[in-house]
Image 1 (spheres, helix red, strand yellow):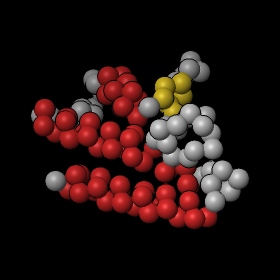
Image 2 (cartoon, helix red, strand yellow):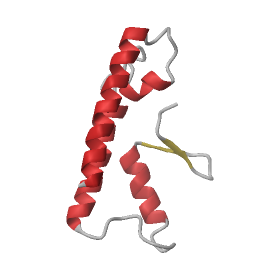
Image 3 (tube, one colour):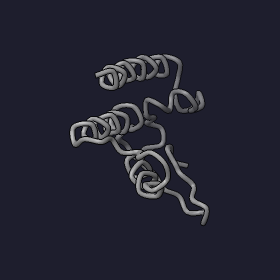
Image 4 (cartoon, one colour):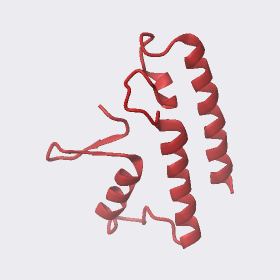
Length: 106
């Protein structure tokens, strides 16, 4: 199973945070406040945050199941990620969350 995944009512699945975000924004565009930022600058910042997550936190950039994404350190078993590698990935996740927080705060 790929994370993130959005399971749809018909049983199909959408993968990738940018695809899921775009789907939700489109699906619920007429339901309450917009999920999209109001200005081109704010929308670009939202895409940047999404890309930082996808490229630096979620992606292992490998098709080898033994190569784990940084976020995988939170749920992959010890047969796939040992303690030193897990600790390094947790440090990287903390670093990237700090980057995201800085961008959100402006």
